[in-house]
Structures are given as structure tokens and as C-alpha cells.
Image (cartoon, rainbow, N blue to C red; front, top):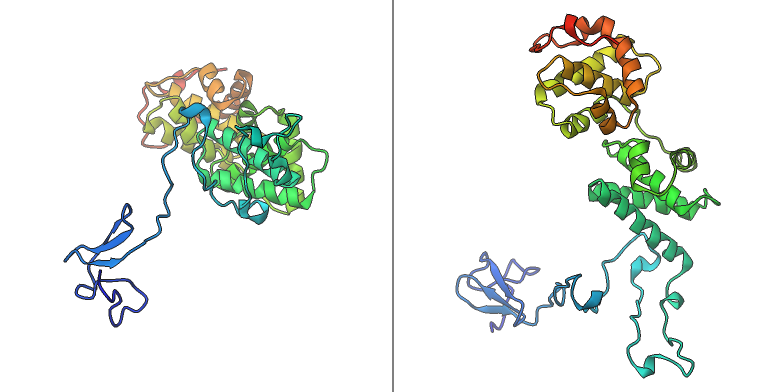
Length: 317
């Protein structure tokens, strides 16, 4: 090994004395740092920060062989640097009455247990609709703020978690409907709506208003519609709102009606029921919005739209 592994001018950097700019190769098995140019060992006993071994969930009956615990969680008290005691496997783990001598309940507070259960529920709901980790992290932070402030006493933690996930989706610019959140949770739409309003008031935060464009790409993708139809539907919905043709209608129903109108004018036609199943609205709701938009259909379509069915032959409700 080199007697000095720090070159002049590189006092804060471990490097090869002969090749200070050379990349160092780390041999984790031996704990050495080796110069890639000359093979000189410039550092030894390097600490391996990786896992001890890989863990497979379907092996050893779910037992985790890792002894270093989970990652640090700043949302929990103490950064989640507590000790988790595994199940006892010998006589020394139990007293004369057969009761376990060491239990996790003594090392984990009730507050942390509540947070862990809520974070697990949020993560499970997000997995069901493929939401990214950024939304999960924001929802966890919202739940932590609500829990610490004790603003929603008496409300179900599952309802609060569902409302936090709904708010996180809207704040991250990928809103989901209440019906979509209800489908992945065990809470009613009314209860989630109540918690949603209470959380916004308690945290003094806000969310952007929902527009038709927020749902258009996802609805059209789920309906397997081409980009031409999606662009036309987006244009129709935007113009309908600008011209105040659909006053009082929700953005979701306007988006569904715009998709129906654009698809009926193209070769890729979709029925009201197909669109309603994807958008989560009733056929009657789509029909009512479509009735308002149909008389002005000529000025709603983009100029470069390629009509497979003329406007005059579009369905009349």
C-alpha cells in the first residue's frame, strides 16, 4: 500500500500520488481503493455502505436476514432509528408463562405506530393506480402535518390518508377524481370530501382549480384514441369553456362530452358508456353536456381537423 495517498493540492481527496486524476476502483470484498492506472492500493478498510445481502420476499417464510434495519424516515420521531425486535425463537425469549420478554410496543410510540400505518395505507393506494413516489412523499408530509396539528380529531385515519393523497395529486399537477380515490380506498366519497375541506382549512393551503386539460390525455389514452382525437377533444373542451357554453358543468363531464364529440367525428368512435366508464361519469351527464355543446360544434372543432363524419351527421341527443 502507498505510504501517502493524498497528493499536494488534493488534501481533501484520496488519490494516487502518481496519478491524482485517475479513477479509483473500490474492491468491496477486500475493502481497498485501487488506482485504475497503476494498480496501487491507495486506501484500505473502506466501509461498505451497501446492504449485507439481498432479501427476497418469497424466501425463508418472509424472514428478513438484514440486521441494519430500514432506511431513515425523517417524518418519524427520532428519524426512525429505533430498534425493532424480531420474534423469539428460543426458550430464553419467553418467561415461565410463555410470554415474550421483548416486545416492539415498548420501543415504538403510539404516534409513530399511527404514522407508519397511515404511510403504509397511502403507499398501497398509490400502488394501485401507479402514482409516482413524489406524490406519495407529499401525501405523507400532509398527513404528518395534520397528525401533529391534531386538527382532525375524531376522523378516521384512512379517510385522512385518502384525502391527503387526493390533495397531493392535485398539488403535483396530476389530479385524480374523488371516484378514483374511492375505488382504491375503503372510505366513501362524502367522507373523503369532508376531510379534504377540513385539511385545506387546517393547513391553510390551497389547490389549483381542476380544468378539462388535466384529465384529457389520461382519458384518451385509456380509450386508445389517437393523438388527433385527443388534440381535437382538448380544443373542443377549451373553446366550450371560453365561450361559456357549458356553465355550471364539472370539468370531468365537459372533458367526457368533448371526447365523445371528437370521437364521433373521427374514425375512432367511442360510445357514451365506454367514455363514462373511463371518466367515472354517468351516460346522462355526458349527454347533458353534449346537448349544450352540439349547437356550437362548428366553432368548437379545430380548423385542421380531418372529419370522417361531417358535423351535420353527428348524433343529436
